[in-house]
Image (cartoon, rainbow, N blue to C red):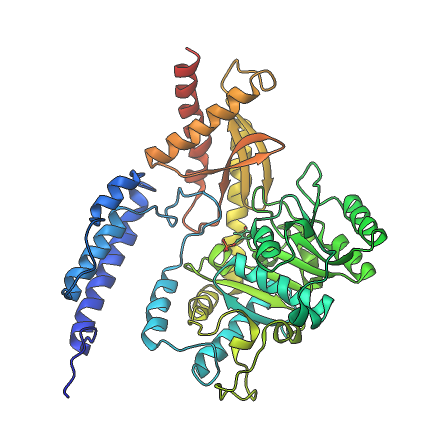
Length: 485
Ligand SMILES: *Cc1c(COP(=O)(O)O)cnc(C)c1O
């Protein structure tokens, strides 16, 4: 049989199509910052472009034409989180070297589940994890593994800590009733998923209130642990935020570490957003205690600017990762002379997402990250100051690179017109998005609706943030004129 598979591509064809695609991406990278952040099209418009009624193609199509079409669809109909005026949620601009890395990783396609199936890739991932630990001030001999994102990284820390604290019986018999975990009410929804999916139930979470700055209240945490012990429940973990998802507030990590040591509890830090700010001196001194956590989740696809997807779980004692996840089936011939990552997490086959992170770390270096992350923080401070200085804008909060603010048109009373203001700012956000000029998201703090800009974007500069308060105020003025003529 002389076989020419429908998916095979000869070296010459690959070279031609690949170079053509890289040229298109380079052109798009050059033009993208000048155009809109998003075309803000209706879902029906976008769906119509790929002809939703079309059945699965029976026969194949020409690869060159397909790549051309796919590039056109994406360049013409996507939201660009790499645009300098994208400030939404926590999604960074993606380093171009990461795109090239993903192509290289996919071409070689090592399976980084086992050392044998991806020897060089496993070593690169190991070094990536050690460098991430170093950047955070976390022990470099910690166990760590790259995962799809912050949710997964937090799950790994949660499960490693749960088994470490409650014992291997958990894996045989399930959880004892009364197991309790402590998290501030500002915690990201991964904790809901973790409690729910891993069988302890939402009732196992003890929600700790936050103070006026959005940080976990230590008095309330201490009382909650005491009350649970008195009621014969089993506290096992406290979760601290190194940058809460809404406002970016950093919990008092050193105090939480003290309490966990005193009480014999696992200390997990969710640093998916703010963890990497630990490499910037003076960003927030609370981050200095990151190294005291038993486990930390960080997100290279946020503040390391790696393209999606890349999260990282770090566990101080690697034995706790193996302790939570390892099974050795008889169909594997992966003796433990070298690390095989399938034993360290929930995935079996694993892609080489480490390559893009490794190359980003090398291209920028520690100093490069200190500068980029530091600049993002300084821009958020500048935005906060510009918002505070604007007569029709109220500044709310600023932690790390997240600033919140809202439009308060002249003559509107913040107390009497509270609901009106919330609605007005909701409309400002929607109109900004539809206009495609800038993209912000929102935060609700103490029941008040704020516009929220999160700068994890190495393309944003001073002009981009200086423009934002007046742009929001102008839209707000217009909405106000329509609603209260
Ligand atoms: C983004 C984020 C998560 C979830 O991370 P994903 O990468 O979206 O899965 C969890 N916690 C915090 C604090 C976050 O900012």
